[in-house]
Length: 500
Image (cartoon, rainbow, N blue to C red):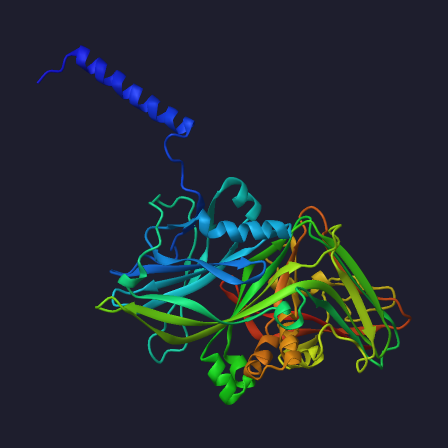
């Protein structure tokens, strides 16, 4: 059938009018814009393909400035993008905005579940977001990379890994909505214990040692320790996840020393980023004394257990523990004066008389040092320490101690005893039901990264201001930490000086 030119012209004109009307409607706000909230894209690029009948389940938990992490999403992931409504996150974001210049983290747990409800693989990561931007625009588009670990066959201890990561060229799909969890099997993490300074000390912050220096009584020289911190470019704290099986029951039955070596410890590098704060401190440590430089911080820990939940035929849900348990440690914020200057300071005294930031901290530090090896600091090619001695007038830059965990040549990593501080708080309180947790917390250290792009934003070191040379020993953890698909031993900022 032939169509006349007049009819075709009228049809095209009508189409143009319709398109123009739709565009005008968007401009006038008549049609609804993109729903406000967070659009989080996760692409399982490391898995060749999702097994037949399998599906992904995701749990997203957001840090809060005044309590434990809050689960804001738990559901089945269809496609690559999930959606978290603005109403679910606005309250948390607004409270962070009041705290100041902090980019808090969101923990993302990812499970691959088979058609019959068995776990195929799982993984965890963290991403930062800007709460001020979320409050301003009401919408954020974010990307995440997750490393998932395949579940080993029965009797096989070692596991293989695959990577789940963001792909900027991923095929666009409709964002997944939270599913009705009663219709299938899913996995989730539930909090059992939450440890924060204010719960036991009444104060939001605690003095967190970031450099500990012990000058031997046999030394003949004075050492000067210095720390300068500027967060205008950003200081990034990691979160550390220590995973194990039946941690609580095994620690109570066999002791923490039996549990600790069996923990799998992973560093999640994007927990908290803090801006626009600056501070510095120094100390002179004479022979026979110990000193530490501290910064006021808010360290927290959560002890969690994994559950497997399945819907019953009659509409009820049955959940059971899987046996997997974990301890998550992170630093939420740093204390500062109204001017923005960080609260920092130093304490020096004889070991028996020194005032640690928390009573019994020395006991927990000793527990941590039971899991480290001490090594003589020798830095080939360094003008000062290539011979292994720190002569009068020479200095050791702390950044030279941490090449193994630098995420780039522009970053300086430092490892601080966050766990020992929290464990000491628990010891002071003396809660019997938490006695098993303190020694486990104490051996978990957290890294912080000073990002120094085009300028030095962190300067720290030890200077020999005396008249005799010394040998510096640093401490390296015996526990392996997973960093970017690799395992490494981490140095702890506890240094000892002995006569050369």
